[in-house]
Amino acid sequence: MKIKILFFGISSDLVGLSNLDFEVDKALTVKKLKILLNKKYVHLKNLDVYAIAVNENYAIDDLVLKENDEVAIIPPVSGG
Amino acid sequence: MKRISIKITSEKLDLEECYRFVTDNSCGGISAFIGVVRNDTQGKKVTQLDFSSYKPMAIKEMQKIAMLALDKFDIQKIAIHHAEGMLQVGAIPVIITASAKHRKAAFLACEFAIDSLKETVPIWKKEYFSDGEVWVNAHP
Image 1: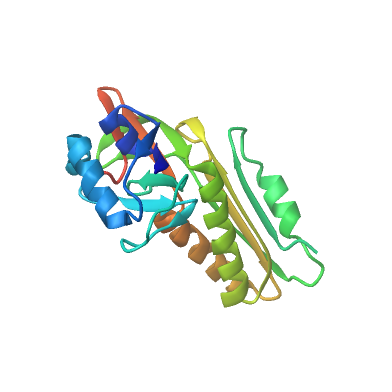
Image 2: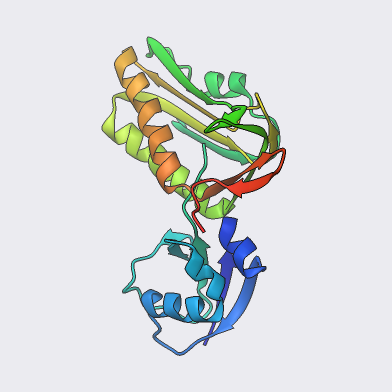
């Protein structure tokens, strides 16, 4: 299935992209997606920690992704 | 009656607008927090800051914070406005105002809102120095 990935802040600089369409297996969890992304974009591993949002909400590792989900890579925020 | 005003904009933030939004005849106090671009970070001279956001989610998260603040504190109205784009030293990236019958709740709501914003709202800043730039809070 196809999902959309958005990169923000330093993650966008590390992978050199702001977004991409990503083909993944059905019923992939957020946790497994992180492993896939860290493999595909080795520089992401340089980030100690990042959160994932799915369809504009923070997601837990066990969340199961669905076709056409919008997944955002959220490095540590620094607004204000 | 609208009790929450949320905004992310590339325009200059307007303190008067945030103040006016929260005014209410039932309120005896209005508190404001104004974030300002500082000229140094740990002894290094900052020239400017670039703010970017995941705007639709950032607005949702700011809305959640405002709703929580209305719930937790005895305030009447709250405004949370954030700027994006390149800001120079002295410019204003964030304004929070809250009105309350009594001052204490307004002070507490502003503090709660800025502390929460810094933890959960997907906004990022890049600091520019004379010799380079760095994403704040990220540790690659």
